[in-house]
Image (cartoon, rainbow, N blue to C red; front, side, top):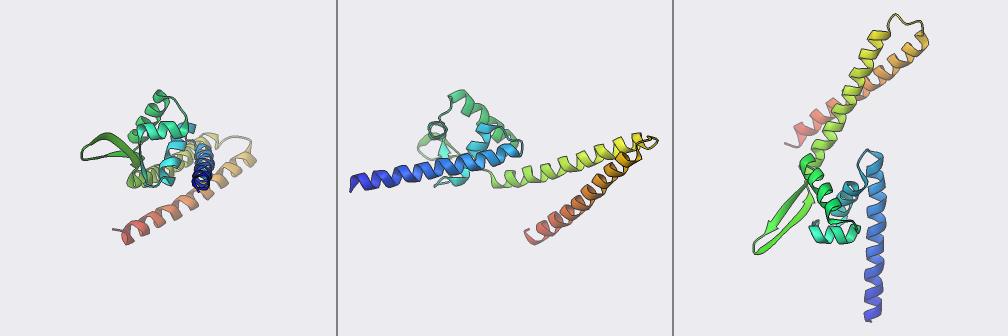
Length: 163
């Protein structure tokens, strides 16, 4: 009976590790560094959804300094915060869902800045003999503007219905 429980716990831990790795890779593809991405993934998947420093370190099998640096980056970005419990000196790290929404909105602004940068480049190129390339840049701008206008409307609608 004890072996079956141990086997189930090992399987569950392996499944969690696989999911953390999968989400961590997805986060890397959005520009996140590997360890912060895996911390976010681990905290999103954990039950309860908070963990102390040493539990995070043990799960990710990374050095104290690597985990500390990553947690500080995530807290600075507003994606992770910590809580404490009365009578317990440990800090427990958790996802800051409001901060996570803020990061998503910031990514949207970054896309807007990229669009503005392309517009600036196109302004500079207006007398260029490479008109085909200029038309293609204009198409990128038009597409990006269309997407961003839609996103702005969606954000406004969301905020209206969720306040």
